[in-house]
Amino acid sequence: MKFCSQCGSSAVTLSIPKGDDRPRHLCGSCGTIYYINPRVIVGVLPYVGDKVMLCKRAIQPRLGLWTLPAGFMENGESSEEGALRESWEEARASIRVDDLYSVYDIPHINQVYMLYRGELTDMNFGPGPESLEVELFREEEIPWKEIAFPIMQRTLEHYFEDTRLGLYQLHRGVINRKL
Image (cartoon, rainbow, N blue to C red; front, side, top):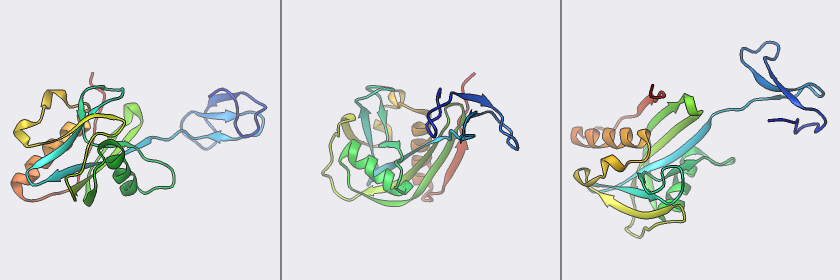
């Protein structure tokens, strides 16, 4: 951030505002403080019977790798609405949401993931503009070495373990940068 979008007349500086504990972008002219907050990614782990749906990414990052349908939450929508929208955009999938299933913080990239578990309501699905392919996989068929993001792999692992136990619980955690 270089200039104040509130007054447009001043360059912003990075400093700690009075009463705060971390650097923020500040306008020296009008006093506006800019808070840059984490991005929320919402999605669904779609299932039907003993299979889960994965999408092969048609975009960067991780082009050509497999993921659950998910993306950035938009202003004006709930996390569940965003998850359903992303499922439609990426997989043209109609889903009945069961419950919030996993919440992971990824502090080093300023992201929070919220993934729901949801049952496919029909088999009319296919790739949207951000997917090359959309397929259903049994656990033993999943291309584990081609999963795009650690959060998706962890969520899938939890799902299959919970399925074996017959008990679905909320999974939470933090994914830290690999050193």
